[in-house]
Length: 111
Length: 119
Image (cartoon, rainbow over the protein chains, first blue to last red):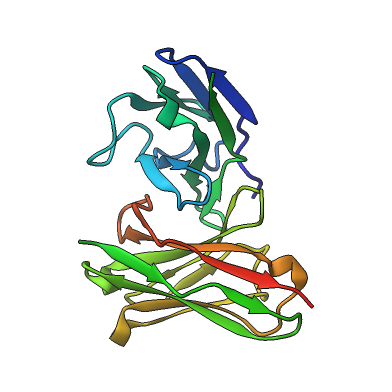
């Protein structure tokens, strides 16, 4: 089971919107609505930002939203803020071992 | 309050064994899956394997199968990740995370345990 594909980096100016894509296959992203997104600041543990494609956990800003089309899931950050500068990883459930797979990770830079 | 507290950093030599832990509190431990995630220095996240605390059902990433052992001790609400013979390439940060049985997302994470393997 290969890692899901994400762009290595995405950047935007404060206030802008950016979108990060996460491409998998019909065995993971495309086959199930169990895609999550995690934010990771340097030296810190990942934080769940989006689950089941488009749901936000309690306490997560509504500037973060998720969607999916076919084998590609997307995370959109609107009203980009300096604190959003971090690494972002998608993850999907798959019935194939190892059951969950991460994306390759995207570094978001706020210009 | 849900908490996952991991054991402290370790410095080991190649060939040595190691067992790190992840203790949960504030939730019903046996109703959850515990996952272990590896992050090599400067690299991305990788699922190593998951274990259901209710009955110890374990699923390993083939990349880690045979290299590590994942276990739980329900009496102390703790999950473990162990190596019988460490290699320099095992140097990484290791995180535990939990997902409620029936859910497919990992909503709480431990603070991480840094393992350094060097001669």
